[in-house]
Length: 602
Image (cartoon, rainbow, N blue to C red; front, side):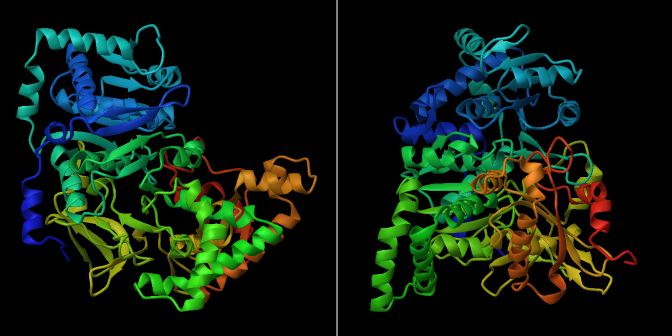
């Protein structure tokens, strides 16, 4: 199903042909308007207008040309989310280069593979730690550029700026010639998939992919140039990169700080109007509220959310609440919900969740408090946003309808297929995998889903993650995991397994701050590993899982579980750089633990 009326199709077709062209177009409309807000080392916030942003980007681009950067040469960025990441990425595009994104927590082995496979010979690193990681790869680089500080053999950020200023004076038309030569099909970005199975694949995304994402979002009128986004998502991930493209096309501002502990404190400082995030962020906020209020405060909070739940059907359908319920909701807002709104800056109109499935129970909980969380859907291969649930008319549990200009259909086996301007050019140096993934223009997502008569799509699970019990029943583990996580506030990670077994079991890890607080309250001087194995903890988790099982079909229920005494980590190879569970690796590593959850004859 497609979502593109004729006038919308024309707007998308007439979009800027490249990201640099889009930025120059934005500056022509909004030169003195704020583009970015960011903190300095002393946590003081500063702003850049669109004109100031363009000036910095062009100086950095000239600096890259001074270092010898050539057309479509790859430049890797290994850094957390910060203003310099954005400026560097845009500068690479202006210089005609291609950005290779690298998560700062990626292991040295995987960094070596990505840089070698992409042939990235220029690398921009955040700090000395990342610089050392690059040097450990044993690869030869033309230039290593250091954002923070100085180091022998590396070009400092200030040096890059100085070289850019000198180059611009000698070659004033260099950037214009490059920008004029870029088109929709010009390669812009290489993003390596998280690789839950095997080595990651390099996804080639073009300038046209990115400008399409911005143009499609612009036609929806969900956000405008008057909005302020709080941007913390990893820019190495397609979702974060997509949001920058949307910002340039639409013209809203972004407050940028990728430090996760700073999210909630910063919201009350910058007062954003919308924020995008991953499901775990919203789950953690819910957990903090559910477990943070005790005694009379806890009773009031539970009453307030009960009232909020009763109000949901009326508010979702735009109907007036009964007089008593309306009065109760007003009181609930004054006593409880308003404080939650204030902590989040007081101006938030909605959140968008992406990168993994969000449980509808979490969405409903937020909506009870007057905060809307909707899901978007897409993947690296589709430039991020392929569908979006409109926050003005949310339908919880779905990922909404196809983005304007994109087509979505469900294959005979239930797989979600996507076609449109957001689909990648292909996998880097891998024509065979490209041909497998894209057939007749349709990209096979690997996700299983359903579509209703209005075009709203619901994702049930990853196609490859579905497993069949010995009784012949298929189980979608992500669905089961989502229900349990939504009902158990103390868990950090969960992996449901059971291929060929009589029933499903789970491996879980605990939320460390919650667990340590639990131990401290009881006077238990123990570390995470010891507390996680405490009998009272197991009994508590069992109760939560039993309650979650009531929301599942009988064959989906988790019959037993094990609490691991440590988190699943990137370093151990059990989690990808963007924190997705490597299910097969976990099953292999903890095979003995899983076996212990079944009778010996099973």
